[in-house]
Image (tube, rainbow, N blue to C red; front, side, top):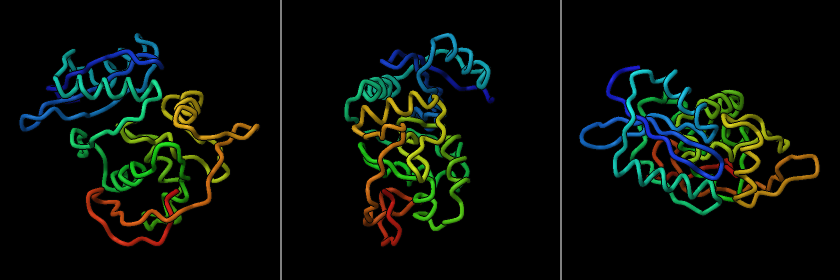
Length: 206
């Protein structure tokens, strides 16, 4: 990876997490968030994927790490997307992630619903792939997407962590371990290309 990247590791109730970031136009931009794991595993993953990154932090990175720590403890946290470096994501993935970000705490959607919501009804598998490669997990809550039958699907941090995050948010599970899906409701006024602009939609997201 290119030089100029920094990384910061911090502890959460779920393990040690990491943030890779860089300065751009005087602003700290998040390149990648590493989900909580063993401290040595996080450091090795960062060094493998970002060998030129050096340890370092910034007041804005300190703030976001504190929010992630609170989120991992089960607290309700509102994240800003202003620090995310969207340039690391191709256009389709950006659409998927911006849509995913609209799923509220305590609710889940499915890969198929997300695909239909962004007018790509046959792209459920592509949606799953885009979420699997989400560089900003937790801030963009990809753990809130499941299979159409409530099965957990996949998750960068493993299915145990995915279930734990959903349980912390109040999502119920069946005895067979599947997330209980609510009846779809129409999310009014959302443009998947810009979370701050609105347009009428037909397909329910969650």
